Image: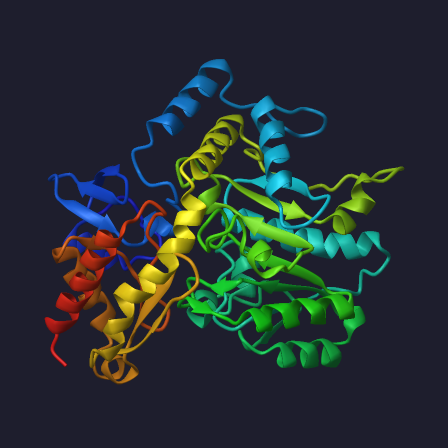
Length: 417
């Protein structure tokens, strides 16, 4: 019987079948306790952008810990790595005059953005702006606010309404967004939350035209545009941020994962100058929000070293090159009888969508395919709707993608047509 309660797990099944214990990693690969090697097609959990085994990140953590592991950043206090990282992120931010608020991870970042959007309108004398608009299939973390925003129905199941005023629209219709703002009333809508590519909901890229239109709709209505880049940030889409790739100029931007490549937990919210202004202007006001580990010194030191690697090794341009190679390797799978489509074409991010007819006949097919991949030396997971996640590290090479495609083909063939 397992003592550790795993996230997103059938614990009866885990207790009966046991865990696969991952013991080491190197580049785009990990190893279990028995020494077996696996290509990590999920990049940990969308986060290991620079790959595993980076001694310089361990060294950055050790050096900072020897000096000062961390100190509270509440009030006027700060640590040097925290300040340096904030400066670095402002340089990279896809909006001018940004401020940075640090969190412990992506779910923290989303909750921070929700609270800040609501508090911003209160500071502007419009507290009635308390409606948040989200998209179907969206994933915004698993804290209370993020669960309340979820566009994945299973993630909300069993909970009461966690946020009082949430409207949901199609993930790819700017017209529906505009109509919803008009129906609710622009003077009652606080913010629109948008993943530039829907991630855990199945990896659904949208057109640049949709993103541009959605941003313009929010700007015209005076609604805050929140780009949730917890997955998309730090090179995943071949740019520092997806918002930069698409020219979105968001009011708020949430990030985490690739900020440290998962070497330590950390997240951030980049805050546009317009949103920050009432909190920074005299006579000033205290935003009573923060986390014990906000701006953690050791995590910040690791993040700085991680950003150095992304720049020095030109992993972000490499990700843009991999974009086409991911499509070349995976698109032939769309011809398989057990596959409806392959969604790719934007960065190092894709999904192999299992056929609806096969899923109806065999609800356990996603887990079977994941098990078949594991037998063939590939680790990843099934997403909402029966899609297979593809989000390897940015150090992935063409040969790794061929291994992945061959493994998926083999796993599918093992279950017939």
